[in-house]
Image (tube, rainbow, N blue to C red; front, side, top):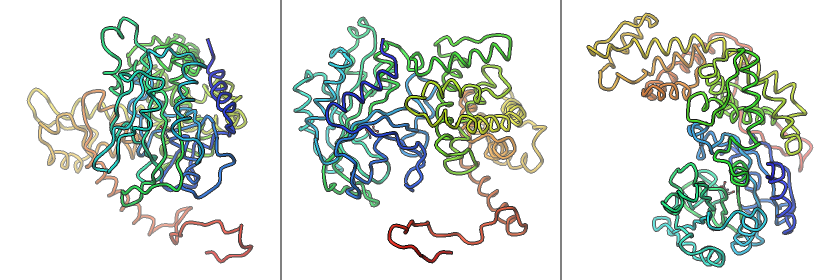
Amino acid sequence: MLTANEIRSRFLDFFRSKGHEIVPSAPIVVKNDPTLLFTNAGMNQFKDYFLGNGEPVSTRIADTQKCLRVSGKHNDLEEVGVDTYHHTMFEMLGNWSFGDYFKKEAIEWCWELLTEVFKIPEDILYVTIFQGDAAEGLEKDEEAYTYWKQFVAEDRILMGNKKDNFWEMGDMGPCGPCSEVHVDCRTPEERRQVSGATLVNADHPQVIEIWNNVFMQFNRLKDGSLEPLPAKHVDTGMGLERLVRVLQGKQSNYDTDLFTGTIAAISDFTAVKNNKRIIYKHSDSKQDVAFRVISDHIRAIAFTIADGQLPSNTGAGYVIRRILRRAVRYYYSYLNINEPLLHWLLPTLASQFEGVFPELKKQIDLVSRVVKEEEEAFLRTLHSGIKRFKAYTSTLVDFSSGSFLQDPQMDDEQMRNDRQNFSLETHQKRISGLVAFELNDTYGFPIDLTELMAREIGWSVDMEGFQVELQKQKVRSRAATALSTDDWVVLKETTPTNFVGYDSLEAEAS
Ligand code: SER
């Protein structure tokens, strides 16, 4: 059986043999693109080449790119750990043509690599093509259809709509029709009973997309219109975690050697700290979801910090903090661990990725210190926050009579507010904005953590109310800043800083 490291190398070797230059992954944290916080696709670092604003080192490039899909247009966070094939951080293997080859070669090589190099049986593969979109004035991708027909039976070439088969990086930027490859990993018996064609793009855990071939032809402008690009390009992305799972014959990405080391380390931690080893059992239990969430999230946390993004209260830093707190809450609630675990997993991860992303090993001390401090800080308030959450959800409403109960931890104004908004139907299973805000402000619960905990018990969160409270707090703190001098005061908002050093040695600035 090929290891994940071997599979990654074979991908890169294959495209090297087709004249591609292999380049390193760009940092996972995006510093120079206001439309993105994190790299969410392999093509991000090449955006300028698609738009005709820069020259690549070669017209053919391949790499493995660290990606994070937890914010903006591509956001998989809800699925992570609950299912077995979505991740926060994942590696995207990709090959690119910048105005060089187009659909013909991209499709030929895609098929050659999957079926001849990796030897995936053809009868478990399906491909999709863009069916066109009248509203956008876009036609069916006949060209891709014609090339696929050379290799794939027509009943395995499926039509896809704009949502699945027209790829866009964000609300603006390069985009185009795409062809995906899906693998049906069900048993032969299951495949005989139900055709895999009906399960493509239907959230079936065993019928999954592994590779997306995008044919970049347009630029989406701010006003929503599409403008043809100066040249045509290829942008492909294959999820390494899914490919490894298929090639290692596993039912779940977490059963591949990309995750088993970390999962074993989590299990070791339970044995060392609690004197009772908890073992991962590959099930849907909350305990197993916790193993998956933690082994997924630690990768996102470790690599973003190693790439220079510290957890914080705003922007990209807050995304990291949210992911970290989500992981802490999972080990605290479902693995019965109440001391920092995440930092303990870092050496395992650093060794595993040393050959491909050496930056983690190089900075292991810094990353460990940051992660441990973050864990400790959240663990200090998590226990009281959970108590508060439970008190609220169990004592707010007397379900038998429908009457409103006094919550001992709420002050009078909070109670008055909640009573005014109260109606049994809507409020019965809804966390008020005020309480969601309190959990956030006092106990450090990111709002999506409160939403997650609410969902687990069949409740929802009054998000509008939460936003109102958040806004009120902003006004309060603005007023406070105006009165007192803190250690950091913004005196004047600046315009963005432009680097002008290529053309001049002096410039005026404030
Ligand atoms: N940009 C495409 C994707 O992210 C292919 O690389 O799916």
